Length: 406
Ligand SMILES: *[C@@H]1O[C@H](CO)[C@@H](O)[C@H](O)[C@H]1NC(C)=O
Image (cartoon, rainbow, N blue to C red; front, side, top):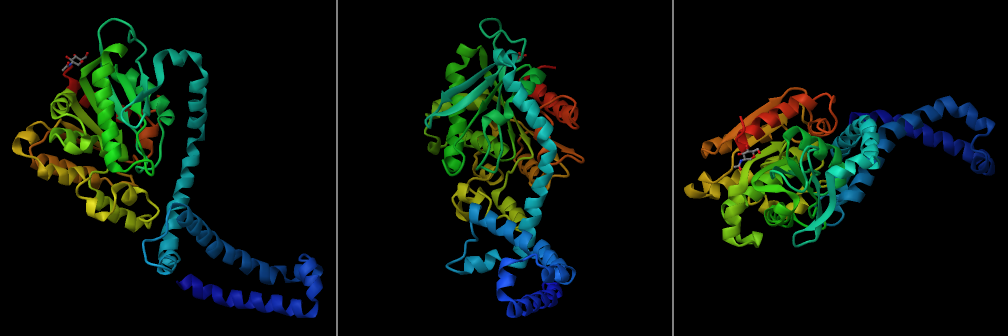
């Protein structure tokens, strides 16, 4: 607020100066903005105006466009606009948006990604756009280069579920990651699209992930997949969906629309779940979004169907509804989280690991210093990136434990 008061004298001076010129020479003022008079005034007037534009115009412009595109605050009538222009909200939204500029560092990765698709050699090792499930979503399938695609021993399978705040993302973005992961884990990696908001809500997404597991079960043989040897790996919202789907399957949830016997079999085939920077408690995450000022522009509360459903769709609270028998069937978890993650704080994985432990479920927790929310997944795409070996060594160690190779 202090900035506002500081700028008022400049604004007054500016309006005053403009009115003076206007009265003396109205036509000249309109037609020749860069006339001599204007040039003379340049240093007295334009500087404060430019400063004003920097301090006000840009933050307000950015924040209003973001809110216009992604959603106004949830207040009745005109009150939402009052809430939308509150200086604190403007400040926090601007910071959140400016922080995304650091993603420009990924331009090199973008070209490597483009290049990957152009190289025909890579097409031998993956199958693209296979339709699965009730909503006709598609999945890509990546072989490790030494997998025999027709015969030989069937290969264990990893389902990779990408993140994107339940409202963005696409399987094509993860081709480098999936093909690299297939090599590192000696597995077939399946990377599905799912019905992100507004195409679907959280239950649709959970059903999609479950459908994808049904697809693996029913079509595995055709692709030389060992369907009973399955690991789930998810990032951010994808880690949330992996955990939640597994817990729905464990309790044979009717909402999945899959026969209970089938759900049992699928549950038994899940050897483990690896969560990278995951969200496991929606209410906690909502509180964090509020601190960042992004709770209304975020797709989370819309995808979850409002605050009332937050607990129902939180893996950490869903655990509490399981019987002892069901708890015994919860697959082992591995949670990996960077301590420099500002989008999903490290407490998310910490608290979920505590919850799992308190219900005697198996969990390992890795907290990696200096790693943030994006690098934990982009650095898995190309060998030699900063955290490539750090994160893969955690994943490989846990993965081998899960599927029982020493
Ligand atoms: C999964 O695959 C690995 C590697 O091929 C194998 O050693 C292990 O026995 C398999 N586990 C199960 C449960 O089939």
